Amino acid sequence: GAQVTPEQADQLLIQDSVIGPRIKERVAKGRKATGHTHELDTLEYLQTAKDEVYGEAINPRTQREYTLADISYDMMYAGGFQEGSEIYLHRPGEERYLDLVQNGQHFPIAVPSTRHPATIVHETIHLYGSDAWKNLLARPGNEGATEFFTRHLLSKQENPGVEDGATVFKRDSYPQEFEATQCLVKKSSIELLADAYFLGKIEPLRQKVGAANFDAWVAAMKVKNFNAAHAALGCAPPKG
Image 1 (cartoon, one colour):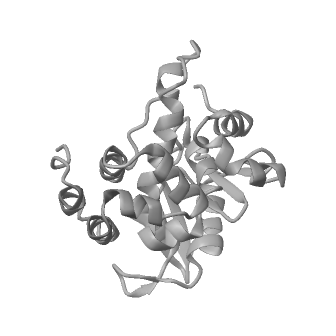
Image 2 (cartoon, rainbow, N blue to C red):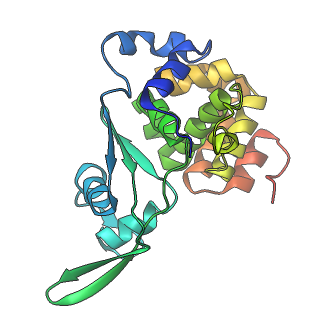
């Protein structure tokens, strides 16, 4: 079916009136998805994630260093990831499980799902996320804002009229993180979120919604307490 290409993702970002002005200097210096996107089969995808992202980190679920099976579980619905200037996309084969052999023992690993047709847009947005935002919000808040801007871009695109075209611009990833970020934008503005996310200018956003409210929202997001995140800003409880 249809897939958004790295070249198309680059164009979507730089042409957007909110995102484009905030990333143009980095684009001019060569930061982009085109030429920096890698499609990997399942084993290479998981091994690259271990090498580039997880390293020797300890899995809080097992209290041991992350294994490939742990990483597969952790990335089951991601379909891709970004690290540094590079983007890695999952290109699975027909297999549903990988059979790894270690010390003569077999370890079946569930294969993560294939990437969404517009995963490259989500991962390209990650290329420009500020360390200040990512470090403050941790993964839930970072993914929520990234998904918010992904849907912001895709909602303005027309159905290309090609096979599976309708699915290219429809996203349901990170639904709770997205809704909590949408609540934040409703109480502030997309421009203030963009300044915080892309440029690391967080304080204006914090002051707009109230310092105490924002700090409570951040604390709730870090632990995935999405009901508390909505309540912190006075939004209706999340759907579902």
